Length: 101
Image (cartoon, rainbow, N blue to C red; front, side):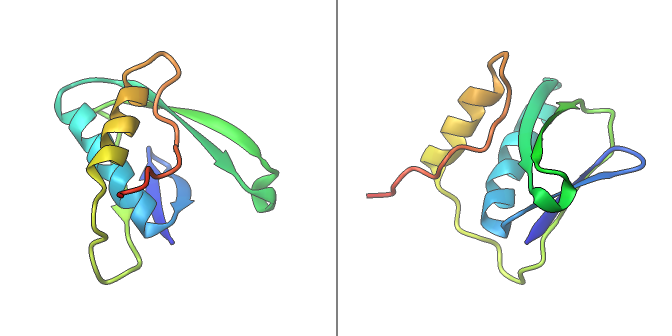
């Protein structure tokens, strides 16, 4: 499990390293372009169970913390689907990974 840490003080959101690697590509790409957007995420019962939104902006501190020692392989189709969502009014949401076959 990795963490996306956003803001000061940081909001810490846990994701599987593979998921976090894909989110990192999308988030960094959008922010490098100077594009702000919302990110929707769900949190588990240990935090009260529910969902939240973050306003992702280039001026807000951001960290990606991975716990695995190897970089996960990336699925281009998944990145493209996540990018499309991030460009809508709904914002970036975690979608199921498309099949590579």
